[in-house]
Length: 393
Ligand SMILES: CC(C)(COP(=O)(O)OP(=O)(O)OC[C@H]1O[C@@H](n2cnc3c(N)ncnc32)[C@H](O)[C@@H]1OP(=O)(O)O)[C@@H](O)C(=O)NCCC(=O)NCCS
Image (cartoon, rainbow, N blue to C red; front, side, top):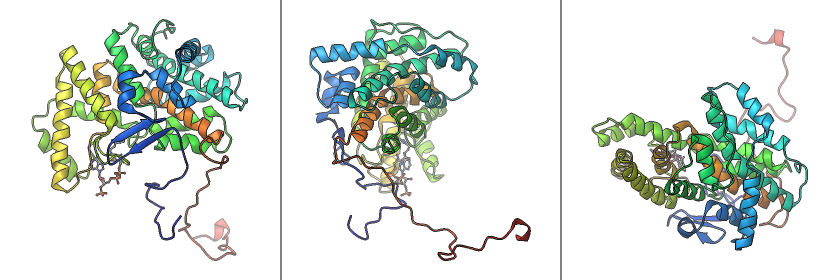
């Protein structure tokens, strides 16, 4: 790396830390590519299952390969009984992301191939994780309400089965298809904070579940996946607000952020947000609840106008800005929204974990071990004099 390039205290923005063959973003042009394929093409023509296969295996599957992969996922959906038993004893007010993060090591305990570190075994582990995360989310939501968890239905798609296990009703085909598209759109996003967390953890040769648990933790924060919950809070707060531009102005003048806007990489509208915006408008019409997409649109316009006054022309809606109203229209509780993101992103995390473990984009595996410049007390190489506690003032 060239000398004098500032790489510290900037959250690693713009710093290349590894090679990857999984996804690519052009932040200026608003382009996202998974394994060579534009996200727009995949959203229109593919499915979450096919995209998960693409991310994990690097190629689009044949009909047979997709059937086998989907069958393996469906067969792995059941949640081990001891995990459901644990859920019954956990505090009902616990946050679903904490529950999810705590559940991933429990899934590890139930994995018969936990310590088998071949690529094939890791793909099978990925299949089990992708298959079970929706069931964990659905079961927790039901148990916390005093309801019984529901068994998966093998004739339902990944998204439809999740809605069934959550809501106890098989969703209509359009909603299931829309949720499937949401999952596909969130499935990977290069070296975002949670993916980097997963890769950093498994670079120590820790197993896949240890990496995924770290990913869930990183995703939960409100600057990352947790932003969709904050967006929903904002929409609720503004439900009866008459003057959105004035609210936006106040928010910014008080140094607060407009959640769901801005991105570390995109300097234009997030390509995923465009799909979700259109989906929200369509679902709003379908359910006669157009106020939600309209409110989002008003906030977007007012914020862009206000940012422009400060010369900030690159802060645009990100994926969370429009996923929140979409999930709300699907009847998903606000505090589950980040867990829905995780249900999808596990596909990308597992693909990155495999790439990291097997050095698929670089010469050999490398343990992440950055450095930090020491800015603390320093008394020379001999160290400071240790005063016994009684002698300290
Ligand atoms: C995601 C995010 C952290 C990316 O930020 P970034 O551009 O890499 O870096 P910063 O956070 O330093 O933002 C740069 C500047 O734009 C401002 N900014 C960025 N997003 C903003 C937002 N949503 N509302 C108000 N101001 C924003 C920052 O305050 C900062 O201002 P400063 O230069 O005066 O300090 C940031 O846009 C954000 O916090 N957005 C809201 C949370 C969110 O939606 N997260 C989900 C991301 S997918």
